[in-house]
Image (cartoon, rainbow, N blue to C red; front, side, top):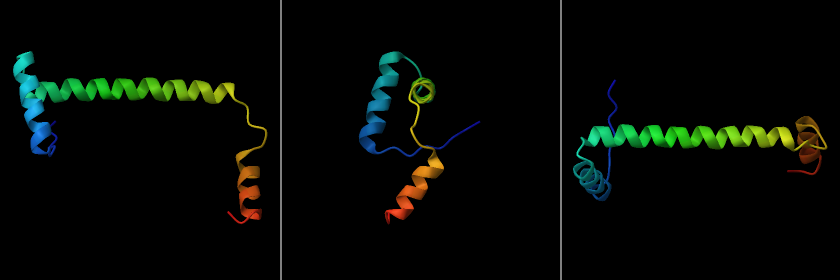
Length: 73
């Protein structure tokens, strides 16, 4: 599968330099970067989900929405 990505000139030059240093194609650098970005996001989302289980709200979401509506928010 192919994806077209537009980069500004500065970012493109950095990508090109990194590819040369690593001895891989620019596409390979992009693949690696995207994999790393997704992995980091998944770890953050996992931590957030775990934290939600630790903190117990005092009121429900519905009660909070009613409170905001009654206060004119």
